[in-house]
Image 1 (cartoon, rainbow, N blue to C red):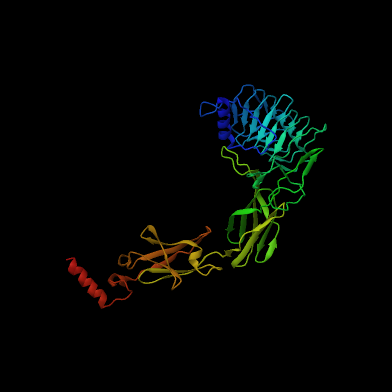
Image 2 (cartoon, rainbow, N blue to C red):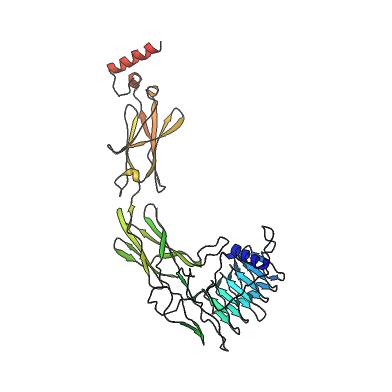
Length: 480
């Protein structure tokens, strides 16, 4: 009883709740595995080649490369947890060689080997949540009663080959671009599907059954995500409940960026449970099919110590445009997947603008500085301006202050705070404007001679009159 409880804890901690939808097989793998008593695992794999000859839980802690063989498992009741890391070979050798009983291999990315994972005649393995790609043989099985669940198996010469084995179960895996699978020359029977059962499958369908095969051509007349006809693998081995995609791509991270003055870049991220096949950008009624992939991945949905079963094909597209006309432009993205399910964004827009220009600067006798700033392609200059600052020099020191926009006059303005003290002085002024796209515009320096009469302009209205005299008398009356 204690061993079964330990097994349950191990699986929950390592891969979440594991549900097998195959009625024909029973039994627990790795039932004698002991979880580390410490929170920090003692068995760390940080180099290759590596031989496991003691029962334990082993963790790969970084991406690793090797010439020839990678990891050999000789101990029974052992778990190898790749933690999402990659084991990369040189085209020879075996990535993970299981030569022992009741072994779990999970969360590994295994590529570029002669054999990705081998369970030999003495080996018995449960192979879960691995991405196995670009090998000659993805998974080679010589023994009986091995289990292969929830793996992504792509771009291998042979995906899964239970060469001499019987009663191996290969369910809820994602197969794509493998030349062949299931080469069983002696007609051995293996299980490529379980019973139809409600539950999330590897391509986000709501029913579990068999595996996903990218070249399956059958129909799904009732829309349950399971094919109406079987998928023939080899000889008498068939997947009677092949998984079928029924979901369109999803989009996110729609971005428009610009580099002044001429280039606008449109970006989008598409995600799908199979592969995104075609992307179209429609701009101002014209379709563009030449958007560039700037990032692409095919992996499980996430990895945070626990694998999430569904596959996620993620691809980022971008399209650049130069010399667009000033004004508003309208666009929409479209995408379909290899099952020809389409999706599109809503109609979106962006504005093409010119470089902000400081057209004129005026300095009044009361030292109010106004500036006319415009930008072609916008109706309101504040839409594109980050800030406008007034810079002025008094004596040998430069000062600056922000300028405010007046929507009535459509001018930026600021009042230099010192006034009477600058009478008969020479004032130097210039303006710096920064657009929201990061471009700067700076005016020439203007030299302004402050009139001497400003000394007597007490109310700072630009005139010398009785009002100034009243203010002066009042001031000296209050400050004898």
